[in-house]
Length: 355
View 1 (cartoon, rainbow, N blue to C red):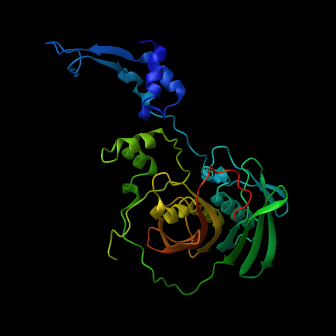
View 2: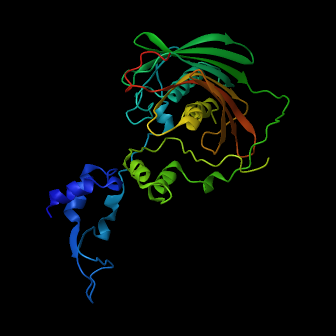
View 3: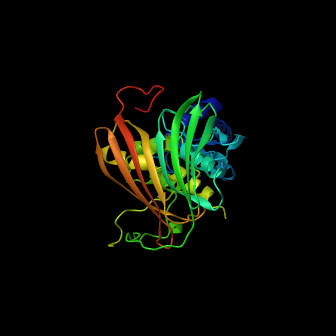
């Protein structure tokens, strides 16, 4: 067998299709071709063939070539970085390796929210932190054009401040966020909702580990495992770990909130779509509006339990309710998101407007 024929054969193996071409070429050059036939008293390897068998053997010292090249997102603080242009105006860009909306390659909604909160926070007295937002997604964002975030001061009071942020591309407002800031003060403490009892986050599998299990788990059909293996996968900038529902009966303060607001949009839409998924069905999901309440201080570098449910989906719109708890069981964030969910009938083209 020639090196070219070996490379061609390897490229047709689904489990190897996730490897870069350079790795497949290198493997084709390094493998040893072993031929086996009817068993003899002296076997050259633990392989027995009833007729004839040809094996491609990769020496163990080169086994690292079988690992796909690891692509990673930049740190979330880099993704959410803003450049000041002039008073109350900031510029944000979409990094090439940052998350994007699937298929259509629009700007990820969480990026709009995180950038807008960051811009608004820069114009507010540092003693006040964001406690409530309303976000409105008006038009699809172009990945290749910088976004200008223009902050409007609606009110600056002793305890509260209000800001309106417009995200602008080509002179057109594509996203608007209203944010309220509150100065910390003593008051009543009460919480009726109880955090579900869940395993410690360190004991749960990461998204990457779950993916690797799907590839090798024999309980899944081979066609599904091959599809998962062949699909391009890039780790998220936020470490998200899933656990089963119903497993029981029962610093600077604004930046972490920017990170949380950015992260929640990674999951919300899929909760509405999950009950309706079927083979061959493509669902296009778009965020319409997003409301969050920050009840307590939140640390972006600590584990947060995110409890999500979708109470209704109708007339192509779905609503998601979410609650975030810290590891002490305290409710730190409540949120509601409404999205547009449409079944794709034709290949998706560039979307000029949300609706």
